Length: 115
Image (cartoon, rainbow, N blue to C red):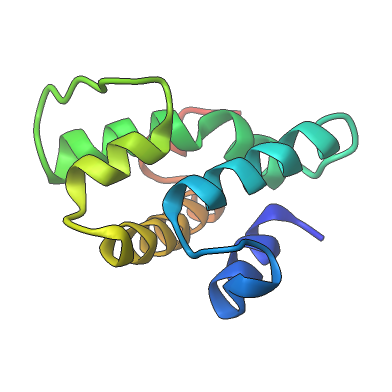
């Protein structure tokens, strides 16, 4: 299973994967997935695990606030800054993942010059 499929399965049935649907719980689940599959994963898994945080910074700078400076190294904290509550954080995460995978597949934006 690729990480894209896993994320959309979590979205569909979150309680099968995490105790509560909170951005932090999703982050740590995906962090474990990335660590467990790093040597054998598909290219799309590697791109998400390595580049989602950097892609998110670019997305924030283009769509929310130019010259955005993250307060921590965790991408879930950046999503918390943008969203207003737990439900919005999770919904925004799924929306951003969809956009991330579209950009990756279309090789646009952040991925236009990445190999």
